[in-house]
Length: 419
Image (cartoon, rainbow, N blue to C red; front, side, top):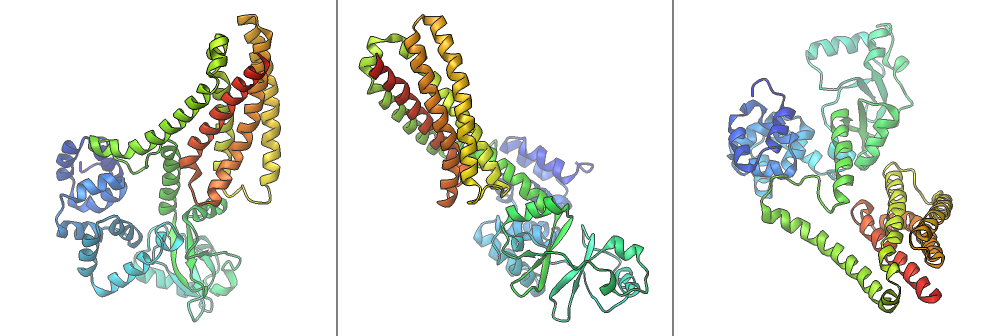
Protein backbone atom coordinates (compact mmCIF):
# COMPACT_ATOMS: atom_id res chain seq x y z
CA UNK A 1 0.00 0.00 0.00
CA UNK A 2 2.86 2.37 0.80
CA UNK A 3 4.18 2.20 -2.77
CA UNK A 4 0.81 2.91 -4.40
CA UNK A 5 -0.23 6.34 -5.65
CA UNK A 6 -3.50 7.71 -4.15
CA UNK A 7 -5.19 7.34 -7.55
CA UNK A 8 -4.20 3.66 -7.67
CA UNK A 9 -5.54 3.14 -4.16
CA UNK A 10 -8.80 4.82 -5.19
CA UNK A 11 -9.13 2.48 -8.21
CA UNK A 12 -8.56 -0.53 -5.93
CA UNK A 13 -11.21 0.70 -3.47
CA UNK A 14 -13.81 1.25 -6.20
CA UNK A 15 -13.25 -2.24 -7.60
CA UNK A 16 -14.03 -4.01 -4.30
CA UNK A 17 -17.36 -4.93 -2.68
CA UNK A 18 -18.22 -2.71 0.29
CA UNK A 19 -17.09 -5.15 3.03
CA UNK A 20 -13.66 -5.70 1.48
CA UNK A 21 -13.40 -2.02 0.61
CA UNK A 22 -13.68 -1.02 4.26
CA UNK A 23 -10.95 -3.52 5.20
CA UNK A 24 -8.62 -2.08 2.58
CA UNK A 25 -9.50 1.46 3.68
CA UNK A 26 -8.25 0.65 7.19
CA UNK A 27 -4.85 -0.23 5.71
CA UNK A 28 -4.42 3.09 3.87
CA UNK A 29 -1.79 5.43 5.31
CA UNK A 30 -3.70 8.30 7.03
CA UNK A 31 -1.36 10.76 5.29
CA UNK A 32 -3.04 9.78 2.00
CA UNK A 33 -6.64 9.81 3.22
CA UNK A 34 -7.52 13.21 1.78
CA UNK A 35 -6.05 12.57 -1.68
CA UNK A 36 -7.63 9.12 -1.90
CA UNK A 37 -11.05 10.45 -0.92
CA UNK A 38 -10.82 13.06 -3.67
CA UNK A 39 -10.01 10.39 -6.27
CA UNK A 40 -13.01 8.13 -5.60
CA UNK A 41 -16.56 8.82 -6.81
CA UNK A 42 -19.07 10.53 -4.54
CA UNK A 43 -21.02 7.42 -3.60
CA UNK A 44 -17.85 5.50 -2.73
CA UNK A 45 -16.57 8.49 -0.75
CA UNK A 46 -19.80 8.54 1.24
CA UNK A 47 -19.42 4.87 2.19
CA UNK A 48 -15.87 5.56 3.44
CA UNK A 49 -16.64 8.81 5.25
CA UNK A 50 -19.50 7.19 7.19
CA UNK A 51 -16.94 5.13 9.14
CA UNK A 52 -14.55 8.05 9.89
CA UNK A 53 -14.37 10.16 13.03
CA UNK A 54 -14.56 13.94 12.83
CA UNK A 55 -10.87 14.33 13.68
CA UNK A 56 -9.96 11.90 10.90
CA UNK A 57 -12.02 13.92 8.44
CA UNK A 58 -10.44 17.16 9.62
CA UNK A 59 -6.94 15.70 9.20
CA UNK A 60 -7.84 14.39 5.73
CA UNK A 61 -9.19 17.77 4.61
CA UNK A 62 -6.07 19.58 5.80
CA UNK A 63 -3.98 17.51 3.38
CA UNK A 64 -5.77 19.02 0.40
CA UNK A 65 -5.29 22.18 -1.63
CA UNK A 66 -7.95 24.81 -1.05
CA UNK A 67 -9.95 24.02 -4.20
CA UNK A 68 -9.92 20.28 -3.50
CA UNK A 69 -10.80 20.92 0.14
CA UNK A 70 -13.83 22.92 -1.00
CA UNK A 71 -14.96 20.05 -3.24
CA UNK A 72 -14.41 17.57 -0.41
CA UNK A 73 -16.38 19.56 2.15
CA UNK A 74 -19.23 20.18 -0.32
CA UNK A 75 -19.62 16.42 -0.78
CA UNK A 76 -20.14 15.83 2.97
CA UNK A 77 -23.44 15.94 4.88
CA UNK A 78 -24.39 19.44 6.06
CA UNK A 79 -23.66 18.73 9.74
CA UNK A 80 -20.16 17.46 8.98
CA UNK A 81 -19.53 20.49 6.79
CA UNK A 82 -20.45 22.84 9.64
CA UNK A 83 -18.30 20.89 12.11
CA UNK A 84 -15.25 20.99 9.84
CA UNK A 85 -15.64 24.70 9.13
CA UNK A 86 -16.03 25.54 12.81
CA UNK A 87 -12.79 23.72 13.64
CA UNK A 88 -10.67 25.76 11.18
CA UNK A 89 -8.76 28.91 12.01
CA UNK A 90 -10.41 32.14 10.87
CA UNK A 91 -8.15 32.78 7.87
CA UNK A 92 -8.57 29.28 6.40
CA UNK A 93 -12.32 29.36 7.03
CA UNK A 94 -12.72 32.72 5.28
CA UNK A 95 -10.68 31.56 2.29
CA UNK A 96 -12.67 28.34 2.07
CA UNK A 97 -16.01 30.11 2.42
CA UNK A 98 -15.01 32.39 -0.45
CA UNK A 99 -14.57 29.39 -2.75
CA UNK A 100 -17.72 27.71 -1.41
CA UNK A 101 -19.76 30.83 -2.22
CA UNK A 102 -19.46 30.07 -5.95
CA UNK A 103 -21.36 27.39 -7.89
CA UNK A 104 -19.40 24.15 -7.88
CA UNK A 105 -19.36 23.98 -11.70
CA UNK A 106 -17.99 27.50 -12.25
CA UNK A 107 -14.52 29.03 -12.52
CA UNK A 108 -14.92 30.41 -8.99
CA UNK A 109 -15.81 26.96 -7.68
CA UNK A 110 -12.80 25.40 -9.41
CA UNK A 111 -10.25 28.06 -8.57
CA UNK A 112 -7.42 28.01 -6.08
CA UNK A 113 -6.59 31.17 -4.15
CA UNK A 114 -2.85 30.39 -4.05
CA UNK A 115 -1.61 32.85 -6.66
CA UNK A 116 1.61 34.82 -6.98
CA UNK A 117 1.14 38.42 -8.10
CA UNK A 118 3.67 41.05 -9.09
CA UNK A 119 3.53 44.73 -9.98
CA UNK A 120 4.56 46.09 -13.37
CA UNK A 121 6.95 48.73 -11.95
CA UNK A 122 9.50 46.30 -10.43
CA UNK A 123 12.47 44.64 -12.13
CA UNK A 124 12.73 40.98 -12.95
CA UNK A 125 15.66 40.77 -10.54
CA UNK A 126 13.37 41.82 -7.68
CA UNK A 127 10.82 39.19 -8.74
CA UNK A 128 13.47 36.45 -8.83
CA UNK A 129 14.77 37.36 -5.38
CA UNK A 130 11.21 37.33 -4.06
CA UNK A 131 10.57 33.85 -5.46
CA UNK A 132 13.81 32.51 -3.96
CA UNK A 133 12.85 33.91 -0.59
CA UNK A 134 9.53 32.03 -0.75
CA UNK A 135 11.40 28.70 -1.07
CA UNK A 136 8.26 27.11 -2.54
CA UNK A 137 5.77 27.75 -5.32
CA UNK A 138 2.12 26.67 -5.57
CA UNK A 139 1.61 23.60 -7.74
CA UNK A 140 1.23 24.15 -11.50
CA UNK A 141 2.78 27.62 -11.32
CA UNK A 142 3.81 28.28 -14.91
CA UNK A 143 3.19 32.04 -14.81
CA UNK A 144 2.91 34.97 -12.42
CA UNK A 145 0.04 37.43 -12.59
CA UNK A 146 0.56 41.15 -13.00
CA UNK A 147 -1.82 43.43 -11.09
CA UNK A 148 -2.07 47.14 -10.47
CA UNK A 149 -2.17 48.98 -7.16
CA UNK A 150 -5.81 47.98 -6.62
CA UNK A 151 -5.34 44.29 -7.44
CA UNK A 152 -6.88 44.56 -10.91
CA UNK A 153 -5.59 42.04 -13.43
CA UNK A 154 -3.27 43.52 -16.06
CA UNK A 155 -1.59 40.49 -17.63
CA UNK A 156 0.73 37.61 -16.91
CA UNK A 157 4.45 36.95 -16.73
CA UNK A 158 5.30 33.42 -17.96
CA UNK A 159 8.08 31.77 -15.98
CA UNK A 160 10.03 31.16 -19.19
CA UNK A 161 10.10 34.90 -19.92
CA UNK A 162 11.14 35.61 -16.36
CA UNK A 163 14.08 33.19 -16.63
CA UNK A 164 15.25 34.17 -20.12
CA UNK A 165 14.86 37.97 -20.06
CA UNK A 166 17.38 40.55 -18.84
CA UNK A 167 17.04 40.84 -15.06
CA UNK A 168 17.33 44.64 -15.26
CA UNK A 169 14.15 44.86 -17.33
CA UNK A 170 10.89 45.95 -15.74
CA UNK A 171 7.97 43.54 -15.52
CA UNK A 172 5.92 46.01 -17.58
CA UNK A 173 8.38 45.59 -20.46
CA UNK A 174 8.10 41.81 -20.79
CA UNK A 175 4.74 40.64 -19.47
CA UNK A 176 1.89 39.54 -21.76
CA UNK A 177 -0.92 42.09 -21.93
CA UNK A 178 -3.29 40.37 -24.39
CA UNK A 179 -4.56 37.77 -21.92
CA UNK A 180 -8.28 37.15 -21.44
CA UNK A 181 -8.95 36.07 -17.83
CA UNK A 182 -11.83 33.84 -16.76
CA UNK A 183 -14.77 35.48 -15.07
CA UNK A 184 -15.63 33.98 -11.68
CA UNK A 185 -19.01 32.69 -12.94
CA UNK A 186 -17.75 31.15 -16.20
CA UNK A 187 -19.30 27.64 -16.47
CA UNK A 188 -16.90 24.74 -15.98
CA UNK A 189 -17.57 23.47 -19.52
CA UNK A 190 -16.39 26.79 -20.95
CA UNK A 191 -13.36 26.74 -18.65
CA UNK A 192 -12.32 23.35 -20.06
CA UNK A 193 -12.75 24.61 -23.64
CA UNK A 194 -10.66 27.67 -22.78
CA UNK A 195 -7.85 25.44 -21.55
CA UNK A 196 -8.14 23.22 -24.62
CA UNK A 197 -8.14 26.10 -27.10
CA UNK A 198 -5.14 27.89 -25.58
CA UNK A 199 -3.16 24.86 -24.28
CA UNK A 200 -3.08 26.23 -20.74
CA UNK A 201 -1.67 24.88 -17.48
CA UNK A 202 -3.29 27.62 -15.40
CA UNK A 203 -5.60 30.59 -16.00
CA UNK A 204 -6.46 33.68 -13.93
CA UNK A 205 -9.94 34.24 -12.48
CA UNK A 206 -11.32 37.77 -11.97
CA UNK A 207 -14.46 39.31 -10.53
CA UNK A 208 -16.77 41.92 -12.06
CA UNK A 209 -14.25 44.67 -11.30
CA UNK A 210 -11.39 42.77 -12.99
CA UNK A 211 -9.75 42.13 -9.62
CA UNK A 212 -7.68 38.97 -9.58
CA UNK A 213 -9.21 36.54 -7.08
CA UNK A 214 -7.57 33.20 -7.95
CA UNK A 215 -6.57 30.80 -10.69
CA UNK A 216 -7.80 27.56 -12.21
CA UNK A 217 -5.20 24.83 -12.81
CA UNK A 218 -5.04 21.96 -15.27
CA UNK A 219 -5.58 19.21 -12.67
CA UNK A 220 -9.08 20.52 -11.94
CA UNK A 221 -9.86 20.95 -15.63
CA UNK A 222 -8.91 17.34 -16.33
CA UNK A 223 -11.42 16.30 -13.64
CA UNK A 224 -14.10 18.40 -15.34
CA UNK A 225 -13.40 16.84 -18.74
CA UNK A 226 -13.47 13.33 -17.28
CA UNK A 227 -16.73 13.96 -15.41
CA UNK A 228 -18.39 15.43 -18.50
CA UNK A 229 -17.33 12.42 -20.59
CA UNK A 230 -18.56 9.94 -17.99
CA UNK A 231 -21.82 11.83 -17.54
CA UNK A 232 -22.50 11.79 -21.29
CA UNK A 233 -22.05 8.02 -21.46
CA UNK A 234 -23.92 7.16 -18.26
CA UNK A 235 -26.79 9.58 -18.93
CA UNK A 236 -27.74 7.69 -22.05
CA UNK A 237 -28.66 4.76 -19.79
CA UNK A 238 -30.28 6.94 -17.13
CA UNK A 239 -27.38 6.44 -14.71
CA UNK A 240 -25.05 8.80 -12.85
CA UNK A 241 -21.27 8.76 -13.25
CA UNK A 242 -20.96 8.81 -9.46
CA UNK A 243 -22.87 5.55 -9.00
CA UNK A 244 -21.01 2.92 -7.00
CA UNK A 245 -20.62 -0.35 -8.92
CA UNK A 246 -21.01 -2.23 -5.63
CA UNK A 247 -23.79 -0.14 -4.09
CA UNK A 248 -26.56 -2.12 -2.30
CA UNK A 249 -28.97 -3.98 -4.56
CA UNK A 250 -32.11 -2.09 -3.57
CA UNK A 251 -30.41 1.30 -3.94
CA UNK A 252 -29.28 0.40 -7.46
CA UNK A 253 -32.74 -0.94 -8.25
CA UNK A 254 -34.43 2.33 -7.19
CA UNK A 255 -32.08 4.38 -9.35
CA UNK A 256 -32.77 2.29 -12.44
CA UNK A 257 -36.50 1.80 -11.98
CA UNK A 258 -37.52 5.26 -13.23
CA UNK A 259 -35.58 4.87 -16.47
CA UNK A 260 -37.02 1.41 -17.06
CA UNK A 261 -40.51 2.78 -16.42
CA UNK A 262 -40.03 5.52 -19.01
CA UNK A 263 -38.85 2.98 -21.57
CA UNK A 264 -41.82 0.74 -20.78
CA UNK A 265 -44.20 3.62 -21.57
CA UNK A 266 -42.52 4.19 -24.93
CA UNK A 267 -42.71 0.47 -25.71
CA UNK A 268 -46.41 0.43 -24.81
CA UNK A 269 -46.99 3.41 -27.08
CA UNK A 270 -45.36 1.55 -29.99
CA UNK A 271 -47.47 -1.53 -29.18
CA UNK A 272 -50.62 0.61 -29.20
CA UNK A 273 -49.73 1.90 -32.66
CA UNK A 274 -49.29 -1.69 -33.90
CA UNK A 275 -52.65 -2.64 -32.40
CA UNK A 276 -54.37 0.00 -34.57
CA UNK A 277 -53.31 -1.99 -37.65
CA UNK A 278 -54.27 -5.41 -36.31
CA UNK A 279 -56.58 -6.12 -39.23
CA UNK A 280 -53.88 -5.40 -41.78
CA UNK A 281 -51.38 -7.64 -39.98
CA UNK A 282 -53.87 -10.50 -39.86
CA UNK A 283 -54.41 -10.37 -43.62
CA UNK A 284 -50.75 -9.87 -44.61
CA UNK A 285 -48.51 -11.88 -42.27
CA UNK A 286 -45.38 -10.78 -44.15
CA UNK A 287 -45.80 -7.30 -42.67
CA UNK A 288 -45.29 -8.69 -39.15
CA UNK A 289 -41.98 -10.25 -40.23
CA UNK A 290 -40.66 -6.99 -41.68
CA UNK A 291 -42.30 -4.59 -39.22
CA UNK A 292 -39.15 -3.98 -37.07
CA UNK A 293 -36.91 -2.97 -39.99
CA UNK A 294 -38.20 0.59 -40.41
CA UNK A 295 -38.11 1.66 -36.71
CA UNK A 296 -34.68 0.06 -36.25
CA UNK A 297 -33.08 1.83 -39.23
CA UNK A 298 -34.70 5.14 -38.26
CA UNK A 299 -33.48 4.81 -34.69
CA UNK A 300 -29.88 4.24 -35.77
CA UNK A 301 -29.94 7.14 -38.26
CA UNK A 302 -31.51 9.46 -35.69
CA UNK A 303 -29.01 8.50 -32.99
CA UNK A 304 -26.12 9.32 -35.30
CA UNK A 305 -27.47 12.85 -35.74
CA UNK A 306 -28.36 13.12 -32.05
CA UNK A 307 -24.82 12.18 -30.98
CA UNK A 308 -23.25 14.71 -33.36
CA UNK A 309 -25.53 17.50 -32.16
CA UNK A 310 -24.99 16.77 -28.44
CA UNK A 311 -21.24 16.77 -29.03
CA UNK A 312 -21.51 20.04 -30.97
CA UNK A 313 -23.50 21.58 -28.12
CA UNK A 314 -20.89 20.48 -25.59
CA UNK A 315 -18.15 22.10 -27.69
CA UNK A 316 -20.18 25.27 -28.29
CA UNK A 317 -20.36 24.64 -32.04
CA UNK A 318 -24.15 24.51 -32.31
CA UNK A 319 -25.91 27.88 -31.99
CA UNK A 320 -28.88 29.79 -33.34
CA UNK A 321 -26.98 31.08 -36.38
CA UNK A 322 -26.03 27.67 -37.77
CA UNK A 323 -28.97 25.49 -36.69
CA UNK A 324 -30.85 26.00 -39.97
CA UNK A 325 -27.81 25.07 -42.07
CA UNK A 326 -27.22 22.02 -39.88
CA UNK A 327 -30.86 20.95 -40.30
CA UNK A 328 -30.63 21.27 -44.10
CA UNK A 329 -27.46 19.19 -44.13
CA UNK A 330 -28.90 16.42 -41.91
CA UNK A 331 -32.12 16.29 -43.98
CA UNK A 332 -30.01 15.88 -47.13
CA UNK A 333 -28.01 13.08 -45.48
CA UNK A 334 -31.23 11.43 -44.32
CA UNK A 335 -32.73 11.70 -47.82
CA UNK A 336 -29.69 10.18 -49.58
CA UNK A 337 -29.27 7.40 -47.01
CA UNK A 338 -33.02 6.78 -47.13
CA UNK A 339 -33.02 6.46 -50.94
CA UNK A 340 -30.05 4.10 -50.93
CA UNK A 341 -31.28 1.79 -48.19
CA UNK A 342 -34.88 1.94 -49.43
CA UNK A 343 -33.65 0.50 -52.74
CA UNK A 344 -31.66 -2.18 -50.89
CA UNK A 345 -34.50 -3.34 -48.62
CA UNK A 346 -37.05 -3.20 -51.44
CA UNK A 347 -34.89 -5.47 -53.60
CA UNK A 348 -34.17 -7.78 -50.65
CA UNK A 349 -37.87 -8.06 -49.79
CA UNK A 350 -38.78 -8.88 -53.38
CA UNK A 351 -36.10 -11.58 -53.57
CA UNK A 352 -37.18 -13.03 -50.20
CA UNK A 353 -40.97 -12.94 -50.49
CA UNK A 354 -41.47 -12.36 -54.20
CA UNK A 355 -43.85 -9.45 -53.49
CA UNK A 356 -42.86 -6.17 -55.14
CA UNK A 357 -45.70 -4.22 -53.48
CA UNK A 358 -44.53 -4.94 -49.92
CA UNK A 359 -40.95 -4.23 -50.99
CA UNK A 360 -42.01 -0.85 -52.36
CA UNK A 361 -44.06 -0.05 -49.21
CA UNK A 362 -41.10 -0.97 -47.00
CA UNK A 363 -38.74 1.22 -49.02
CA UNK A 364 -41.04 4.28 -48.97
CA UNK A 365 -41.67 3.87 -45.22
CA UNK A 366 -37.93 3.58 -44.59
CA UNK A 367 -37.26 6.75 -46.60
CA UNK A 368 -39.91 8.68 -44.64
CA UNK A 369 -38.62 7.49 -41.27
CA UNK A 370 -34.95 8.21 -42.00
CA UNK A 371 -35.75 11.79 -43.05
CA UNK A 372 -37.88 12.30 -39.94
CA UNK A 373 -35.16 10.69 -37.79
CA UNK A 374 -32.53 13.10 -39.13
CA UNK A 375 -34.76 16.08 -38.33
CA UNK A 376 -35.64 14.73 -34.87
CA UNK A 377 -31.97 14.05 -34.09
CA UNK A 378 -31.30 17.78 -34.45
CA UNK A 379 -34.53 19.32 -33.20
CA UNK A 380 -34.80 17.25 -29.98
CA UNK A 381 -31.45 18.24 -28.37
CA UNK A 382 -31.81 21.88 -29.46
CA UNK A 383 -35.32 22.09 -27.97
CA UNK A 384 -34.26 20.27 -24.79
CA UNK A 385 -31.29 22.58 -24.30
CA UNK A 386 -33.61 25.60 -24.58
CA UNK A 387 -35.95 24.02 -22.03
CA UNK A 388 -33.08 23.40 -19.60
CA UNK A 389 -33.18 19.59 -20.02
CA UNK A 390 -30.00 17.58 -20.50
CA UNK A 391 -30.32 16.08 -24.03
CA UNK A 392 -27.74 13.40 -23.17
CA UNK A 393 -30.11 12.13 -20.49
CA UNK A 394 -33.51 12.31 -22.20
CA UNK A 395 -32.73 12.74 -25.89
CA UNK A 396 -32.29 9.05 -26.66
CA UNK A 397 -35.66 8.06 -25.21
CA UNK A 398 -37.49 10.85 -27.01
CA UNK A 399 -35.79 10.02 -30.31
CA UNK A 400 -36.50 6.29 -30.02
CA UNK A 401 -40.17 7.00 -29.32
CA UNK A 402 -40.47 9.27 -32.37
CA UNK A 403 -38.67 6.92 -34.78
CA UNK A 404 -40.62 3.88 -33.54
CA UNK A 405 -44.00 5.58 -33.83
CA UNK A 406 -43.35 7.28 -37.16
CA UNK A 407 -41.74 4.15 -38.60
CA UNK A 408 -44.64 1.92 -37.62
CA UNK A 409 -47.30 4.39 -38.76
CA UNK A 410 -45.52 4.91 -42.09
CA UNK A 411 -45.05 1.19 -42.80
CA UNK A 412 -48.37 -0.14 -41.53
CA UNK A 413 -50.32 2.92 -42.69
CA UNK A 414 -49.00 2.65 -46.24
CA UNK A 415 -49.68 -1.10 -46.21
CA UNK A 416 -53.27 -0.47 -45.07
CA UNK A 417 -53.87 2.11 -47.80
CA UNK A 418 -52.16 0.16 -50.58
CA UNK A 419 -53.06 -3.44 -49.80
